[in-house]
Amino acid sequence: MKYEKKLMNTRTINPVQLHLLEMFSYCGSEQTVSEMKDVLADFYAKKVQKEADRLWDEGTLNGEAIERILQEHWRTPYRE
Image 1 (cartoon, one colour):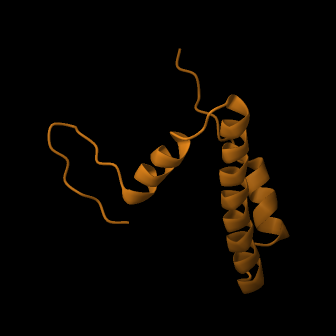
Image 2 (cartoon, helix red, strand yellow):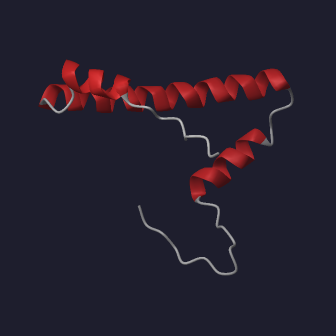
Image 3 (cartoon, helix red, strand yellow):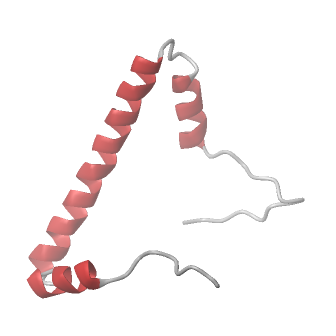
């Protein structure tokens, strides 16, 4: 991924973000927003599944690797 130098802590909007903002500007109801969120979630779920299938097929991902992932502790520990 290409990163641009940011001045004064400003952020730039990439073309995908701009397109999504434009699409969401036409959403007239919470129902429509919910449906658009579902479409985006489905899109990314399919991408993740495709990558998981590729890793499985090449042998990088297997039952043992999945078990190790399930045993990981992903939460940030609380500080005392």
